[in-house]
Image (cartoon, rainbow, N blue to C red):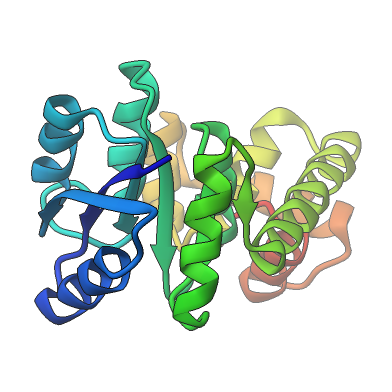
Length: 212
């Protein structure tokens, strides 16, 4: 049975290569090619392909936003994301929105074809390196949040995240509607409770525990 496809990538050479790759395999039929996210979602609505293969980084709506829209609109098309690399949060976000395939661009062409073939059969094709790393990071974050919540107050935990995000005392004070002196008081208490010395060590503490 032929699997219908839509391909999307903002690099014309890569898109042409993808199209040639699938067109020479009788198991696939390419219905459309797109160079941005907006065209991709329009094409999916119009053609209702079995599988959408698209790059994560694209203008006019990146791969993740297209995936979210496919998921939100309950479209039956299964999405395979192509990526050079993905942040752990992006991997978790993709999984949350029902991605069927995650394929690294560095993989051989045959791996992409095999992955799309698996997805067309109703099987997940998720790069295990990306998945394991993202899940490990999620576990670390939950552990870090639990650890901090046992030591710090909710307000202190908020300030830790803001400091780790690079915000200065004045910005934190404005965000939390408190005085700069109050921020400094909170910071001194945080340093003492966590056993750190200054903003740099506090930022490293937060990063190591996945709080940012």
